[in-house]
Each structure stands twice: as structure tokens, then as C-alpha cells.
Image 1 (cartoon, rainbow, N blue to C red):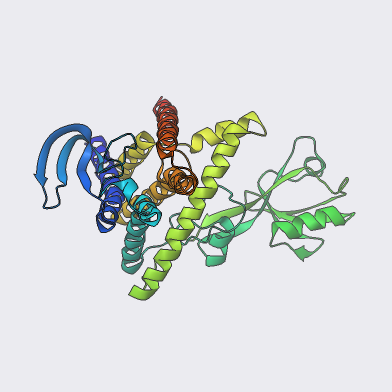
Image 2 (cartoon, rainbow, N blue to C red):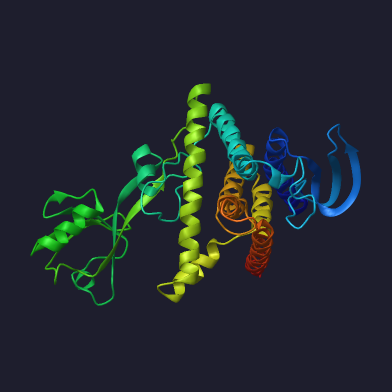
Length: 393
């Protein structure tokens, strides 16, 4: 039953975020004086036509319940009506760009609305972002480790030593999982302070607390500023960290910041992932990047797990908002067939058309470019689906 509900929830979420995206294209196309031939609920094959509105738009119901689509008059450059009144290509460049970016804007607006409601009703950070993005995330919901420590979400419970086999540390009697209390009678509260002491002091007297609770002291001499230990902080989530409720204006401002932070994080993680996939410094880096890739199947599995764990609706809605942001970011990328790629080719067409009357050739080339881009996207989706399915076994 949980599996069924999780899959149903995943379809509902995909339907919502994609439909909102397409609604943006639809509304701005109408406002720009373009004729919209069809607004489809779901993806073809078509089941039936629901109705036709006063402006001649057919509203249709389609078989695959994954969002929807908008078909605008004159989008096909090979059509004889490509430049007719009300056609996409007949409108000014600003209007065409506005239509193309409208879906992305709607995805960001949806995330902003969801975040606003969540911050008003009360929430706290989900967790520390498990991936290093080279600095603060500026996200309330997914802070970096340092941001989580500064806010009190994460508390440091000491600095831990794990001696390496045969090292100076092991030979001096340092036990595994011992916490450092002081070095040369100076209390240690940060990893940087500890490393500085090891690298600069010739003789060390280290006071420690063993994993069993006993206290002991060792004396040793570093070699080339090293003693042969793994050092890490014993960090724990603050169980007393309270969720916060924000007033309307504060919530809207924080939601805008969260939407922006989520979009920047998505850009950074995409760059980090594909850089590791294509140009890994070592094989393990590529394998780690593969683990970060996930598509509709992986997202659906995440919803199944959330239903199984009976997580709160707040967490589910946060996940919906983040999916909406991800969809917006993916579509704004300047890749053929995506909205961002079409914005680039549309702008180039507008520039080229100022210097030549041979518009049809460029439009056919653009159609080929978008077709190849779409094929590459489908291949990428199949690859990601293969990875998602492989995680079940």
C-alpha cells in the first residue's frame, strides 16, 4: 500500500510542477498575442478533447499523467503559416523570449509560494548539505556544516583522534576514538587549533578522554609536523533546536532567499556532478557522481520511502518546492531543446535575420539542433533511469 501511495504521490507532484511550468508558457503566449492551438493535460497519446475555449484553444486529456504541454501556432518553422498573424515567429523577440522563460519563472514562483507557507506555519532545517559546494549555501533548509554549527543546529562534542597503524600516535599509546582535551595544557576547541599545535610544537603533551570515559595523557614528538592520526569532529544534531514560525513579510523574504539559494545550489551541484562524470580526477570521483544522478524513477522511490517513513507533510512540500526549482534550473540551461537553449537560438535568429532575408535556412538548422538536443536529453534520461533501476538491486 505504501508503494502505491508513494507512486501516486510522485505522479501528482510531477503533474503539478510540469503543469505549472506549461501554464506559464500558455498565459504569456496569450498575453503576447500568440494563438495557442492546444493545452494538454498529461502527455500524448491523446485520450479525448475536453473543450475548446473562445480563443480556439483545444484543451485535451492525454494518457501519461506527467504534467502537460502547450502547442503554440507557428512554432514549426517549416509550416507555411510560420509568420502568419498570431504565430510564434511573427511576434517581437521580447515576446518570444518572455514566452520561453515564463515556464521557468512559474517554477520559481511555485517554490516561493510553497516556501512562504512553510515558513509561516513553522519549520526547521532539514539537514546539513552532505556535499561540499565550496562555501556557505545561504539556505535555511539545507545549510552547510559551518552554517549549521553557527545556527546551533549542529553541536560539536569534541575532536576525535583515530591513530593510523604503526604511526607515532599509535606507538605513543593514543587509543582509537579518543577525544582531545588539551595540548600542552592549552584547551583545544577547534580542528584548526589542534593541527596548528601539531605542526608547530616540537614536543606535545596531549590530554585525552578514551571512548570508555577514562582520562589519560601521552607525550610524543611530531615528525615533519605529523603524528599519524585521522582527525574529525564529533558532531551531533541539537535535539533542542526549535522550529521557527515567521510573520508573513519575513516569510516571503526568507522564501525568496531560499528559492534563490536552492537554484544556485542546483547549478553548483549540476556543474560538480557533470564535471566529475566527464573529467574525473580519479575513478572513485566518477562513481560518486553517478550516485548523485537521479531522475523520475529515483524521485518516485524517494516519495515511496517518505510515505513508508510517514514523514510530515511539511517535508513533502519542501521536497515539492525543491523539485520545482530543479525543473526551472534545468530548463534555463542553454542546451538545445530546453527553454534556455531555445532562448539562445531565438536570439541568434533575430540577429541573423537583420542581415539576411534567407530566414528559412536558419530556422531549419535550428529545428535540427533542437531535434539533436532532444535526442541527447532522451539518451541522458535513459542512462539516469538505468542508474535508478540499478539501485533497486
